[in-house]
Image 1 (cartoon, rainbow over the protein chains, first blue to last red):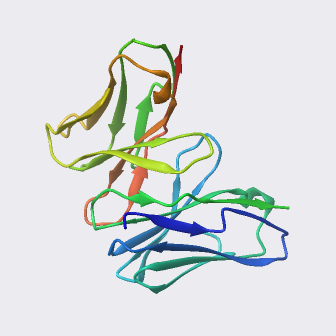
Image 2 (image 1 turned 45 degrees about the vertical axis):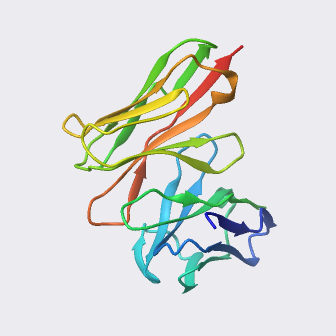
Length: 111
Length: 111
């Protein structure tokens, strides 16, 4: 299985809502990532989990809260988001220092 | 500050023509990655270049890496419409799980 899956594909939420994005991989990769991508821009790294521990937080606002329940799963909990947080959220996984495999993404719209 | 720059940012070319996309980076890294992104889709891994002088080819695309010059190229041979997409290079920072993406090159191949 060489696939990273993400749910949901699309999400529309109000600024007072709480929602979660989910990501799963079964390639045995020990690193998992969240990226945010705005239109016509490169992906921006948000968080990295390595061996199920948070190893990188790129000064992301606390309204984004990552969680890694086990080596195959990665969640991103969303609360009190702003309209400017609307973007494509990409999950990726990799072995250390090797190519990343990306999920299909969640298209998030904050009203 | 670590920078990964690509040029050109936008490329419109005729089918059948050849062209090269350049990726310059400012950190020491022996590993460079190329990805393709179709509109509204996620990123697909194209090439992994792991050492100085590495060259990889797949179909009409060929990628190379010169770590001394901190330069990678993605050469397109006899372009076809199906190659229209955005191409990103990325480097990882040695000793971390951090990947930095280039600015992206939007390629449009005209029939």
